[in-house]
Length: 252
Image (tube, rainbow, N blue to C red; front, side, top):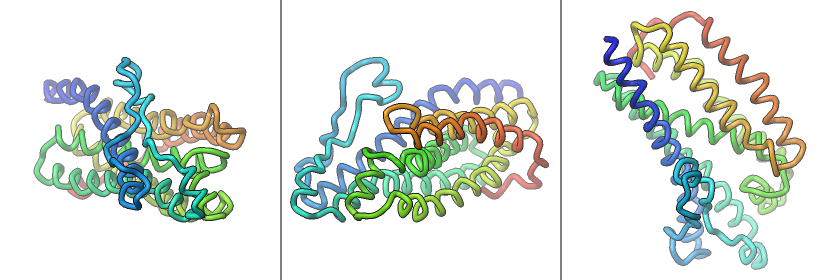
């Protein structure tokens, strides 16, 4: 039992990186492929891949979709610009959300803990991207959500409410059902490991992704990130630590 727990934690380090890479790249490719399908990009695989640096390899910090929205707005096709801008989080991270959800359930039923850990981490990256964009980076003058609001000629509140409600429901389901079931499946005999899993999960969602608005996105995004880090991160962590253990281990 102890060897299995140690193995899972050793594998968790590269799996976190891999899950983040997949969540990030599927988001950017969703933008790019959508732009290509709408005839506003010649090559769907032509992202800005950035430089070969340690930071870019670890965090993909120098990679972006490489979509020029200027000609789209100039042609009066604002709604198409909105479709492309929203494709990252809705199509890309939406796809990773549903794939990880189904795959985690299958891994649980088949008692495949390594696969279960990987798809659980991919699940984290999916819901983390939800909160990263809505609400954290919705009320700003640049970025995907600002482009979507501009293309729709709508208030950021339309984006915040229209996407915020389903994203909030996905987040609620994740913390009230998926996380406790994953704890029980991955670490049924280690209370310490379950608490560590909760801490890593809340850190990634509310601190890592939640901090996206701290710099360069204006005052509203800044304070939403502060609230995410200072209130939701410790608050949700404590609530998850002291809740009643799940009764079953089979449903995710």
